[in-house]
Image 1 (spheres, rainbow, N blue to C red):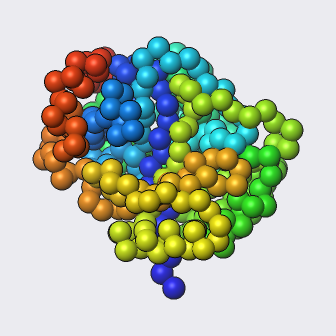
Image 2: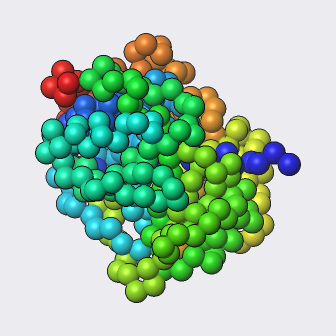
Length: 316
């Protein structure tokens, strides 16, 4: 039977300074700012979406930047590292690029036969770049990162949990995932087992609970094709005891939310309709786009937001 869940849709983090956030993800990592909007649940806060050319599902890292937010702490009950997929021959390039901008980077690590590096953004958000030849997605670059080295989208994500059994049951029995393997206490799950759908669980039985604030992940969203398949997922989850929200309209996709047993906030988001519904593809991310219900308050909302701009030329 065709799986209802197709992999990772997006990952959303809490950030600090909005301009630094834009500079890091567009300037240093080379992702496209595909949408500037607001946090629908906190309208005086930006919601930035960074991804490939069109913000395709499986490529979009999003942030809620709260100016002046204190740093969060990594811990259990959290998604601690977001992994992006890069071409196999590009690790040396990325090591040198990160060092150029004085970003501490790990030695080259090996995991499940693949090479990767690990570092943190300006808010201490955990990031990995996994080099592989299994990803046929086109990368994106504003020009400052050579296209042959550019980020293609998500590789996967690491959940740091005190126990894995109930989360594993959720993934494998109700969300179309399968167990792939274990290596050095890291348990891997996937749907096709390819970049864009990998979930790793690292168990830390005595670990301290993470504290959400700048530099931590707010939630991870999983892909489903459309509203019909989303309702099927919602029914399956509710029938198995999960406390699932009603469907929420996020303009560019519809969403449902629930907490997995380890405490991480999960979302299931539709692939449809995408980010081009209110901007031309060539001009994605240029204007602050608001949902219809917020338009009457545009003047007040824009006055509350710190202006940001692309500084791509500074990161060549």
